[in-house]
Length: 629
Image 1 (cartoon, rainbow, N blue to C red):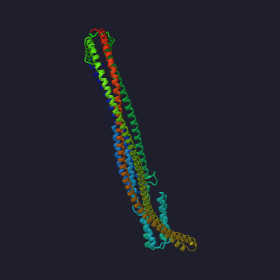
Image 2: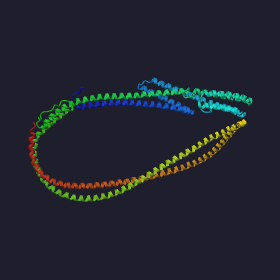
Image 3: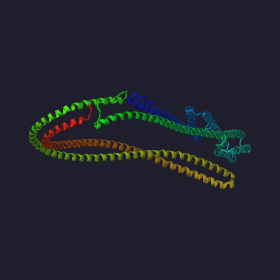
Image 4: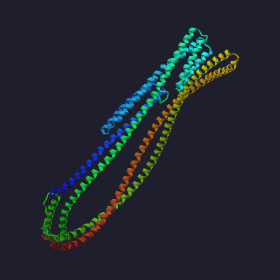
């Protein structure tokens, strides 16, 4: 690039500066674009991380449902699924905006997620069919059938063999529910057939037999349907719908992790590309700027050397003042050359007039000698006046120092009062902190006692369960005693055991009543404790409020004392300033006196200087004669 000479130096430098500024603006724009791109990628990474988190929430809702079988977990799963699907769509849109083609992976992810949802819905439907609790679905049907059969047996006074068959069926049902093993279905069917035989051969009325057989068949059918439903659901986590759901969930998580790896690689690629582009642009701009600066510097140096040569001749005293610099052009150096030529012409005019000025200096020297004599007389009178002023200033200085001492004493007293007020405020702060801490402790103790009251209530519920178990045990022991009595001599040992079990059940019931009474007493005590703690909490709150009011009053005292201390400090500073001013006045008066003496000596020297002026004027004429005008 060639820079035209008729441009001004300012224009050249402005051009280079503009080029550099534009280059840095370009760099800044590129950096901003890359920063925005990185910010969008980071936001996309956050969204993808949220996809992972939402997937974990789906698994948590799945786990909660399989553990608690509540409708809230199913509804939470559906809501979280919709949110996750929307988030995946947003992440897919972000990938497309950055030109990362992962449509196949996203389609697989959506398909896998939909399969996971459908599997979960299937599990929910199966559990709904089975029954989310004992009063719903197949569980309710199963329970109703067996309860009806037990009722028929009790009404017909059935023998112990039929009761044992009934208990065996219930035990097989319980074992299946605990272990989820299909083998118990076959055992249950065999036991049902045996039960039919025992019913047929029993001494029950024919009508009771028919009703009992119908009830057992209904119970057997409900149990078979229950087992089949569990088999479809999956007896283990790797079978049935549970196995399909686990596979879908694992596939979904793997796909999300793969997308996360891809996004991290894309972020690293963008960072690397941004660094390389910024470096290339910076090096290019730096090279162009350096070249332009070197060319401009060369042009400036050439013109400066010419100007420096003329100035050197003028400084050496052998310059020809009629020679002028070349002032052609539009740049600053042309203006400088024109100004230099005017300066030389002005020097030429000055040197011409110098001789006339030398003559005038001689005349002025004579007049200066006369004026020096008059000044000598005036300075003597001035010296007498300054001596009187110095004495008055000394007296004023002594008075100012005494006032300053009294003010400092008052400031020290105010400072001690201020420190005492600060100590009082600190003690109030500590008291307020202690009261606040104690208030929090009382509140925490109240919460603990309230929780104790709730826990004692829960213990009462547990005792109700224990009481029910004791009554059931007593009933079973009674049945066992009846069967032992029917067995005669061979059932005597069994009867002893049944009596012992009934005795233990009776003792358990009595102990439960005693524990219930203790819990009622404990609940009464905890209620009284809660009331006392609440009253203490109110008293502590009142104390805390009064402490805050006391602290506010002490704080106002501290501020007032602080203001007094500040005013005393300002007065002391003003007094010291006045004393310093007095000292300065004293020193100034002394200096005036000394200057008067020096002025007298200077007047004497002025006479001698007047003579020297004449000689210097002659030398000036000799110096000017060296320049050609």
